[in-house]
Length: 362
Image 1 (cartoon, rainbow, N blue to C red):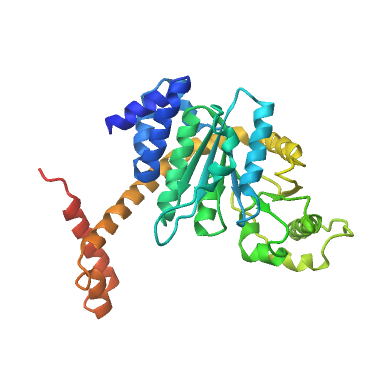
Image 2: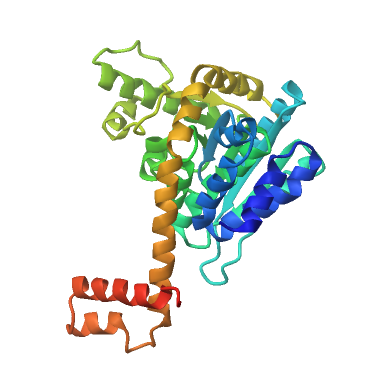
């Protein structure tokens, strides 16, 4: 185990402001090298029982996702303000995942700009992460960052993703529950289904409530959830006059996320003006009171799965390195294209070459 990881974990677990710098360093390591997460678990095993147990924290992991422009960062900022007002002695964390440019590999880490008001608040830790085109490693890296936030005592952590794609669904899946942020003017209810939003959501928040059609979008959501509930239970709820008459056609395409404990619900808020934020946080706190012990137990049980993911990530990294080391036009891929070898044979050769290439020399 790396001495650096062990030293940093001990320093991050210590109380006081001095824990922030080693924690930030650990997060950087896990962002760049997610396969090293098991080293953190190994180092935590050597801590005092109270400190090592903090890896199961935070109390709440809230996933926030939605289409670009829906106001996710503004809403997150409003949620932080309300939590800080309620619990000034509790630390909060934000993991903001931004997509990387496919051409330069860079990312615009805009969440830090929108949350500048919290930059000098020692009780709010904001960590931006760039996807860099790596799905599995990104999700594992986010899990590692969340573990470190638990180590420094974050009570609630928001995991915010940009866009609605495969990586966003994967990253949002590390949270206890997923909040979908919607806004008027970004498409009708059919577009919500096409984007895959409704399948991963537990809470649906219509943001920018002060804008035209916000109430209408909220009504469509209520209708979709009502009809889906009828479809599952076989009972018919009373008809709400303002609901979209076509919503019944959407029910068969509204599956639920596996393993969710939450009954779907909707909120109409304005993150910028603060309308409805208090009621949303009230509901989040109620969910935490009811389900947090089960979520933390699941988080502890998932350590072994995260170690498996780390092994797979490292194996993938080594296999990719072997492929990249082969010269263009003369590697395994060229032989497969020419029909010289099959894909199965090529995979076996790649595994053998990777083992030979990475075997320690003694």
